Image 1 (tube, rainbow, N blue to C red):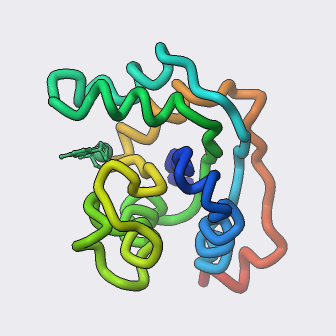
Image 2 (tube, rainbow, N blue to C red):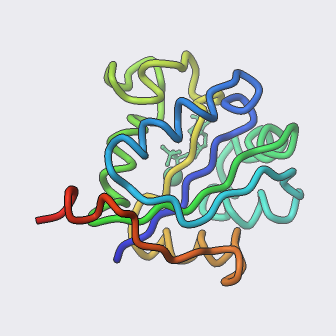
Length: 149
Ligand code: DAT
Ligand code: MG
C-alpha cells in the first residue's frame, strides 16, 4: 500500500491547525501510520529540502522549519501521494484552490502550513529520513471494507 510523508509546518502548529489537517485526511479515508510532534534540527531541515539548496529562499526556509515544532506524519492508502498533494493545494496559498488546506488557511508562500511528498520515490526517501521503522505502525482500520471495494 502506498505511503506519503506529510509535515505540519511551524505556522500550522502555532495556529492550532493540527486537528483540522488530521481531520481532513482521516475524513478522506487515509490511514495514519506514523505521528510525532518534534523540533527539527538544522541538519534534518537541510536534508529534507536538499533539492532546494541552491534557491534564494533556502536559508529562510530552513530557519522557518527549525523555528518552532512541527508535526511529522506518515499516511497510507491507495494513491495517497497525489491525493494528499491535492488536499494540500498549490504551493502559493493565495492561488491555491479554496477547499484545499493552503487555499483555506494560508496567505503567503513562506507560510504555507504543510508539506507533502511530491512523488512515490520522494515519499520513500522522506519517510526514511524522518521516521525509523519502529515508529511506523501497520494496522487494519475496521472501515477498510467500507472504503475500498
Ligand atoms: P511544495 O511545498 O508545494 O512542494 P516546493 O517544493 O516548490 O513546494 O518548495 C518547498 C517549500 O519552499 C514551499 O512549500 C515553500 C517554500 N518556497 C517555495 N518557493 C518559494 C518562494 N518563491 N519564496 C519563498 N518560499 C518558497
Ligand atoms: Mg516540494
